[in-house]
Length: 324
Image (spheres, helix red, strand yellow):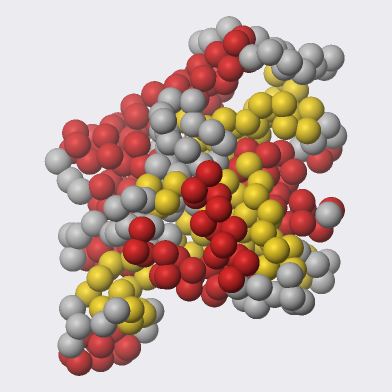
């Protein structure tokens, strides 16, 4: 009994045990408001576009909202920003609760465990995760679950480093943040986040290309090659990706060098990357190139991508729930 939920800035992913297998369900964490009239409703229904009515307003939600925004050259609205609940969209929580309910379904029994992801404390901003953590605990409780918060980077460790006795570094690259966990035998010795993620890339690419951020995100998600960019758009994406990776690695190095009580690893460790932002073509190759440029303070034997980058955090949450 138990489920895992990745509450991401860009995507929400649920992991549920299905016999001997794990089933994953995903929805984009976005919505767009549309005109309220009978013609609009009929068109949305005919086109099978999912929408909800809330406070006498129509909202297209999820992936359909992202596609519609690109068609209309609009920017999607999102309940989360920079990895946390957006102060600009706090009234969107009922929509987000509906998406979570659709992903998880009803509890298999009252009080079923659900481990949900939360960011580590940011090292480069004054943001605090406490409110974010408690709000989603309340959402899951209202749906009949017993919520358990799990640091996002730690969830990657649970999902990907079992053969390493849950020892190594798990990195979750999301839309709002990059989350890092340094783990020793499943115990998190260090967890933190940085405020740069996929949205930071999109925002900067949009600025230099003179397009809106949703359009920049679509170009990126079509499959930009970070090692062999084609054209001005992909070149801009590759430049900001490389900067993002370097920024993350430098922060990990600085935390190691400044932290007291850090574990002493007797053997070289693995670094595993997960998350939608890490799924770009040749991400690991660029990551390795940037890794070689810094004098990393501990020996690393391998840097690799998670087997299922988009599902890794929710899978780690499920594993934590099942182990409890």
